[in-house]
Image 1 (tube, helix red, strand yellow):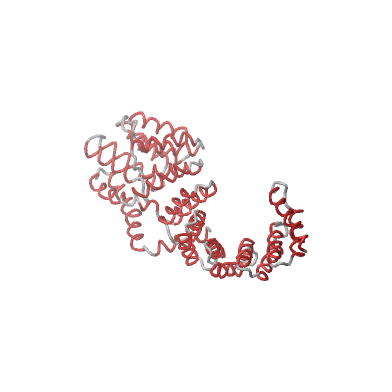
Image 2 (cartoon, one colour):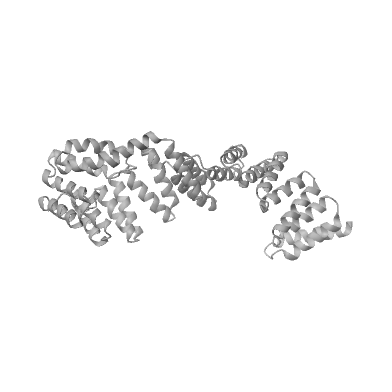
Length: 413
């Protein structure tokens, strides 16, 4: 799957080369130039670039913080000299300069204005970058004390707690970050990812949906598609089919070029007996991955359940051609032939399944059923007996009913 995802990502990038070039020019060239300009007190000039970068926050999440510092310097909420020193530290950081020089500028900014929360954010990020988590927590906590509903401070403290594997504390901070700024996309993404890792699927899916509504670009791509598909599979395993379908819907909104979410949503629709919708999804899955036996098997099984045995035979046969050891396909194909009273073909497929998996005792039952309906009672009795002997005790009712049928056939035989 990882190779497929990589191919899709490359395809996605190549299909939007102009946009990628524009973003790269903006974020890799103009953005550093704007940071340099701000370090020289050219806040209006820098702010124009930061605002443009903020439109692509998927690529440069620091832009809004820099906009705040520039705006505060212009409006006198922070001294221009202190703001310049903050940006000087960022210039050194981006150039991978001396750590001591970077910290010197940060401390000078702090010395000029000790009550400015963004200073503590940038210093905290400095410590976080060098894995000085204790100092980072102190900086972000001070920023919170200066501005209690400051979403950046809670967000970065949450990120620090994550590094320390203190997930519940991180979650509280992400929650506070989003109380302060409900549509803060980085906060939504961080909380959604954390809720997913904590097994809180409802909360994770809710955040991803909000994120899509706030910033559709943030939720695009095959990587997000894979995450949302995983959420759907978890719901499917929990028998929460409608929630699973909702997650698969979101996965396909994120990226509809991967066959698996179509396949999984089709299975969910089939479980609700919504066969036309299931068929549509399996058609798409097969179109995207023509050599995948699962698509044909699931579409064939859906045709079988809806009573279209002719189409079921075609698809299930195709599945066994693509995967010669596909047990479920042979079973479904045998059942289909049995329903159509094509006993020889049913027996062939059940026998094929028996060769693939000798431990599958249910095959003996289906062979017994087939010979029974074909009125070959001697062979039916033999397979029924094999089935009863191998059947675990927990299937008491099956054992009882099969023994009853054996006695009935012995009278006929």
